[in-house]
Length: 115
Image (cartoon, rainbow, N blue to C red; front, side, top):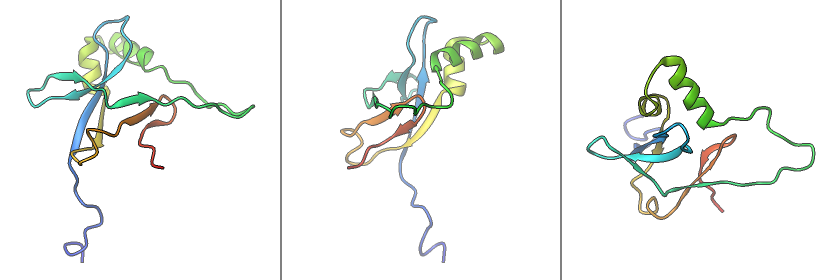
């Protein structure tokens, strides 16, 4: 049955990394190239939203601070920390993937907004 009707169809995937090069940089999403180099990706945009009065996240994540702390704690280069801990694999390769942007929010994560 599984061979005839697969539960999940394999779709192409792309690896992105939330990276920083220097301590004072802001973290940005980069796409892993075939040669192993990271190239900044313009396929992400920060998702801003206003919460109702009295509603707030239980925690706040500053990925810049997280990456810097990991680099210091693990005694690793910032670029190595970014490659090791900042990877996210997303569906890609479809006809709309080069046009549609991924939305990003520090609390909500990475998602697509479908209307």
